[in-house]
Amino acid sequence: AQSVTQLGSHVSVSEGALVLLRCNYSSSVPPYLFWYVQYPNQGLQLLLKYTTGATLVKGINGFEAEFKKSETSFHLTKPSAHMSDAAEYFCAVSLFSAGANNLFFGTGTRLTVIP
Amino acid sequence: EPEVTQTPSHQVTQMGQEVILRCVPISNHLYFYWYRQILGQKVEFLVSFYNNEISEKSEIFDDQFSVERPDGSNFTLKIRSTKLEDSAMYFCASTGQRMNTEAFFGQGTRLTVV
Image 1: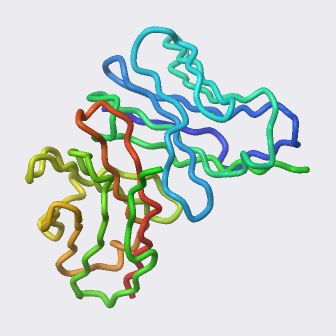
Image 2: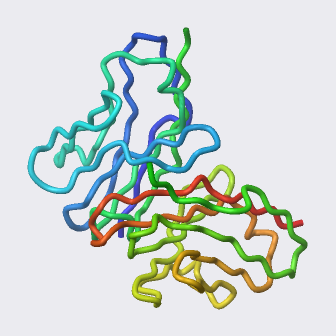
């Protein structure tokens, strides 16, 4: 069985500071890993995903995540937070595909950016 | 930019009533999904749909739930007899010509059962 744990339901950072959102997963086989973002009153938008190959994955809006198999982690980072980054972020895992079939999501982390 | 559209944004229904949540996926997409998020809990997979039939469903998707693509553009989720615990945000998603392509999610329908 697979599962996802996001540490910290709320994270606050100052504008310009490093953003670090944590995600750990458990999976019996090599997983597909995803980060989604949800802005207020909008749907889930794919930030980035790991399927195979390079473990450092770059996404939209300056975000990146690194797949660390030994730590079963896929933490999301951004060097410098912007006010527009304030949103809810969801980590997700799938054993089956790189699309949207049977995704297991974490509980989400709400990011607040302080001016 | 193409987007997945869900209506209504918020629906209130009485316990025991039938409800239909509507989604218009991106027009050339072939794979369709429903997810839900109970307040404060995880986003959970309900069902995937391809070629006019369910391809996969979770334990949550019991006989009270059904999905349909009635007219080639809409994708609906029906709950036959709603329960209080069905109150949640329901998300529709679609992917393109292949299942492994990026999923696009709608903005969600908040269902409140009273």
